[in-house]
Amino acid sequence: MLFLRSNQLGNGDIEAITTSLSANATIKVIDVSSNSEASPDSIVKMGSILETNRTVEYFGMAKLGLENEHVSKMLALVGRFPFPEDQVENQLTELKKRDVIVEKNKKLKASKKPEEPVPALDNIEQITKKNDEGETVQEWVTIKNP
Image (cartoon, rainbow, N blue to C red; front, side):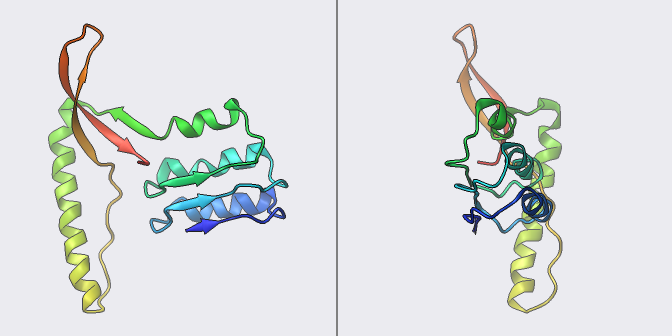
């Protein structure tokens, strides 16, 4: 969890934090609320963390004076996105390989041995929805930054 509540946090600080958090898979909460010294543009740059870091579950931005134009790009990085049908089988195979590595790493960690790197993959799932004609259809989606 990372709370950045200091009102002394400047633009240079935010850029350094953004760089370090982009690949940090342990951070789930980022709260930059009430950082009056940070410009909206620097907060938007911090939102780029969501492009590569898929583990963030909460991104607090209260009391920053942000407007739609500041957050719309960040919000576009969150949610369900159509996943190409022709890539589903390959993605499911890669996800299974990732799960094997995760299980292997649990054993390695228990025996205090170096762990194998886990590939960063977006999960996919099949959903049922109604199309524009009102018909029930199934499609595959990827879920980014749940």
